[in-house]
Amino acid sequence: GAVVSQHPSWVICKSGTSVKIECRSLDFQATTMFWYRQFPKQSLMLMATSNEGSKATYEQGVEKDKFLINHASLTLSTLTVTSAHPEDSSFYICSARDSGLAGGQDEQYFGPGTRLTVT
Amino acid sequence: QQQVKQSPQSLIVQKGGISIINCAYENTAFDYFPWYQQFPGKGPALLIAIRPDVSEKKEGRFTISFNKSAKQFSLHIMDSQPGDSATYFCAASSPGTYKYIFGTGTRLKVLA
Image (cartoon, rainbow over all chains, first blue to last red; front, side, top):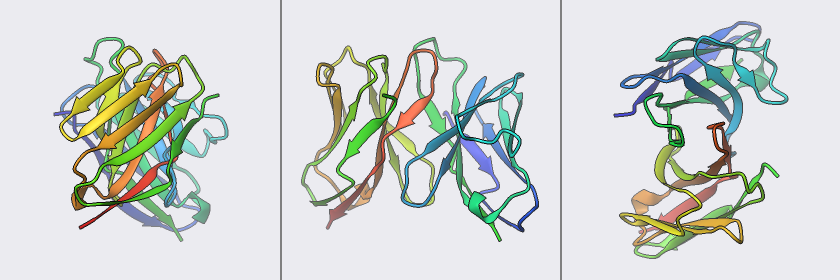
């Protein structure tokens, strides 16, 4: 159980185009999902918290107009990188928290990641 | 105050040895401390987690030791195997936020 998928697993796009990454919780519902960014040999940096039915909460320094997040259902959150540039090339990882867990249960389940390369 | 400091940056252990990774935090509001294992090109996978009211938790070959007064916690991997070679991240979160603050990671290599 507790499987999170991401699509696509890797994508190459040209500078100036937009790319959408999907994150799905396959066997549980997730009112809260998180988007992380990871550069090579570095740690995971939280970009934003995605809440079903409401606006995402972005971390300081993350451009909300560049990284559009939509959490339209209890099992799907999408991250759209708009007008991508080479410096946006990174490994994007989502995680989801099982809404069925009682308060105080903090487990997050991570997706396999999406490798974005902007040329 | 939101940082989680992790050491060492890299670690080489002989097969069958004990791997020890340490983390320290400042924010006393943190109340959940998970450890994740990540292989290259993959997402992190939860190994084991602990709360401050417990000083030690063991699951198989993995043990977390927690020192609340020192604001430190560590991961011990017993009988380390080559298949354990990966990057390990500690993390911490505050009540109700469910947001993780990750450590900087430790690249573990277990020699056959």
